[in-house]
Image 1: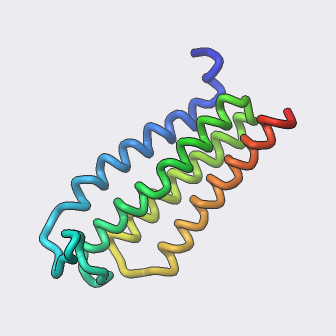
Image 2: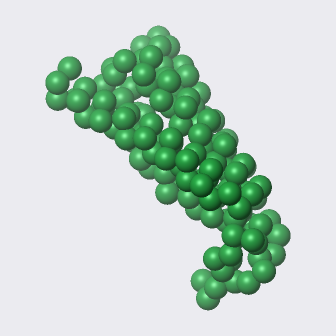
Length: 136
């Protein structure tokens, strides 16, 4: 495992992401929504805390694949540990902030800013991994 020591923060961020997902899962089904759609999901209504909790979890699910894929590709291809660690840690911090904002408030601009920071981190990781695969 010595080969992965340099990526300790990135690997911890993957574990942190798993923990965040496991926290968001039960939160997403807590409490009765004000209204349900035919699918059983809460009806879109940001004033409804049950809807916001559900959306926080679903939004996190949407980003799981790209985050895990870009992070693992970057690590396995030996991309700069400094940048991989920095970007994965920043991603995790932005997503924790986003979950807090999403669940606790109706502040859509702040939620969007947190989402954007996380998305940019994953995008940069993916580009670095792509470059690492063909040019390093």
